[in-house]
Image 1: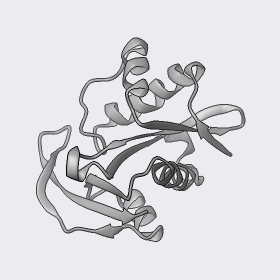
Image 2: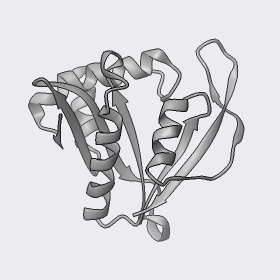
Image 3: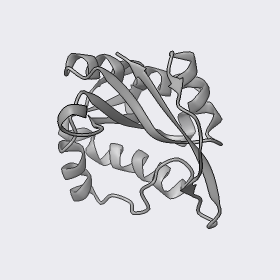
Image 4: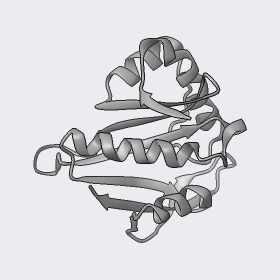
Length: 159
């Protein structure tokens, strides 16, 4: 597996993976999928984006950007998307590790996840195994596709 900065040619595959996660409705807060044009604009607006390639195709990605402004501008936030057919193969770990290095290189001091859905146990185990600290639980912080509400668990790590 290779993780690298994204290139313009990657955008259609990135949008497809991103849209899988959005459509699943259990991890990302977004409800609208990205067209290719919107994806180009969205990914270009990030502080950094990386893609994971497996057997020559994009199977995952991350976006990285400030979590806040001004006096809190040294905190960043990231989101990760892995093709559903490639989950459980180390893609997420490779993306998070690459993202952490990129965040540090960009001068960020803390990587914070604002809304990890409590039921996303694979992501939570991964983050905890990499040294992320949980900040507690926000009851009902995420609206599921069926209209019910799930808890979210913020995480952070000092870079």
